[in-house]
Length: 130
Image 1 (cartoon, one colour):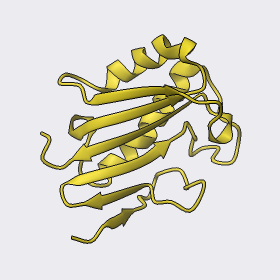
Image 2: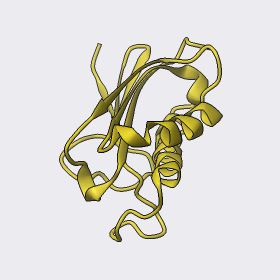
Image 3: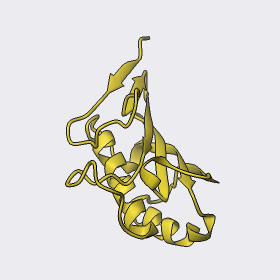
């Protein structure tokens, strides 16, 4: 079964040589999304952790929607943060968009993220999850 690269219109441009997502069979592997605002795609990332989490998840939503999916199809997410001391703020926004049964999740602190972002979120979705 060949893999299919996904680069949806309406998603922020890739910051390097990667696809926004790759579909193979029933699974969609979405690359990490940072809080790039399409209104200012080359400007600096702005906002507190809540605003950055919301923008990152909105960017994930664009990738999912391009394949007819939504957050209910997500089976695994990974959240990368530069400061786990801001976990509560990220988690508040995350819990607004994901509903039970929640996907499996890992949250990892990293030293830096692209565009000096405070958060980056990647997901794996299944077309048969709903």
